[in-house]
Length: 392
Image 1 (cartoon, rainbow, N blue to C red):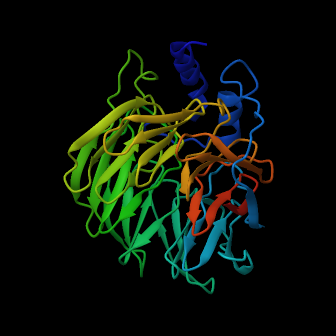
Image 2 (image 1 turned 90 degrees about the vertical axis):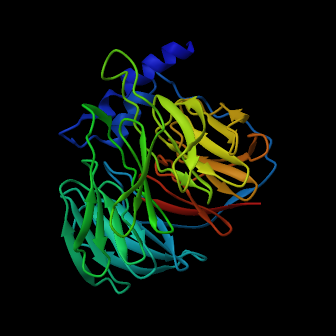
């Protein structure tokens, strides 16, 4: 299959995940994977190759928060605790070091997005557009109604809760009461990728990518626009070809903010002014990571690509996970880790992208981007498995 054929195949297979601007239907994640990365001729998943491990991965602890069903749940790490949730409405708190279950909250709601926490406030969202806030004892502190379903984890900092709704709006809520302080919205294209991505908070700013390839920096306290930049421009003759959405979290390293778009580019911008730095053509819906050397991107064909973070120069590419629906990457020590559709976690060398280690979880897909821990990574599977994994 040529590059242009792959691009057309990905477009056709992405149809189940696309939605019109004024409607946000519920599309099963499994259905999306089956059609886009199924066993047919379109991006048939590569078989796992045997590797010569240079490190040993092992599971430190594991728990379960409940099946994700049609949703993508990202766990949260705060104050030496891990918080994880499932669609049935249970939020579980684990000790980050040992995995011991410390608490369980019955939200009495069907959840679609979560969990977010600063160690004091525990947050989750529902398909009805509700944001729920609890204290450490499981007492519900407040509930706020938004205009559309909440598909991502609410974030909190400096007395604010920031949450994204399925119709593309971003809300700033008072962390103590849930009262709305501000809302940011922009025009949504006719056709967009259904996304489970939320926002990134850094210092006193909110960073978020949007449909149409735009990256925006907002003031945390009032939602005012600090700057807006173009990651990718829609191009093509049809609405389908012109989809160029940022459907993963931007990354920040203190000097710059970078984002990647589907059918577009990865681009980095000055953190304070939003002036462009560098950009490279690549397509991704899974996400990216950054460290002191490189920017790492999981592309839409299953390759992990490393770019030098100051210039965008290509460093390496690992393409032996073709079609395996890999998650966004996470950096842990000397390795870059991604999960795949069969629940495997692959550890790659930061130096050259070679396989360093591999470990299985519970056999279900790892869709949410893994999270870095002090001594490893944290993943949550579609079956609700929560795994703390280290590599030595």
